[in-house]
Image (tube, protein in one colour):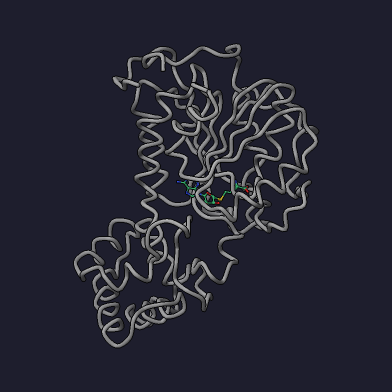
Length: 344
Ligand SMILES: C[S@@+](CC[C@H](N)C(=O)[O-])C[C@H]1O[C@@H](n2cnc3c(N)ncnc32)[C@H](O)[C@@H]1O
């Protein structure tokens, strides 16, 4: 691997955020976009037009979709990098990669794609396997897909009566139910406060301990009942979000070490493998992730921050796809040859 200097690729062009009609609006997908492949996936890609504009694609580029999911964004990337482009899609979830394959195989395009199972933070290994040492664009659409949410056996939904798993990759590590029966009260409080910013962390942790002493915690609906028993009734009645939202978020982040993966990506992988003038487009769904991305793009001389304010979904999209409501896009452009101190 050639030192820490990013490779210069492509022309230095004006970013379409500043020239918003560089790609004509008619060539952009509308707010409802059918999936061309045979995937039965239900997930609707979030802020698709804004993502495509942010990626500023052209033929021949190497693009990484680090959270390829059902391929909702990637299916629109493939034709825009043809001919000669290559898309690398990674996902921790083998089920989502099957959806992605079905979707992408249905796209008629003279560009290549590769799907890799594992965290986007393992990109260096995937690139080595593909004999690539730099990429031109990276997209991350963090969090979980509607397909995972809809799967009764994953435990992501408050209404699920199946096992409380919460892993993106159900073949690795331990399910949330096992962790929940092992963590101490102090550890539970810490997890709920740090990763859920949960105001009622103490009573919820106490109730979890009491409940698991009666019988092991195994399902998502059991966890919901425990949270509802722990938070004051007024909070439950007035809540705009389900009172268990932050608890599920905290546990999911803990079980999957989500913020650690993002930290590795922002601080180690992107500075080393994104080429000069390469773009990173990152969609976040909660303030912890958004803060990390904002600080990375704003505070490091490696980046030019292209979004001093994040891009948010239109009111139309929020109505059509309620999952998009909390989404924020931030975009960073990799600056030229800055010493990263990272040796390869
Ligand atoms: C919001 S969905 C992506 C949806 C996709 N953009 C689409 O439109 O179909 C997020 C996906 O990221 C995956 N994921 C979460 N954390 C990951 C990580 N660290 N590395 C790779 N994939 C991850 C999840 O399994 C899920 O499939």
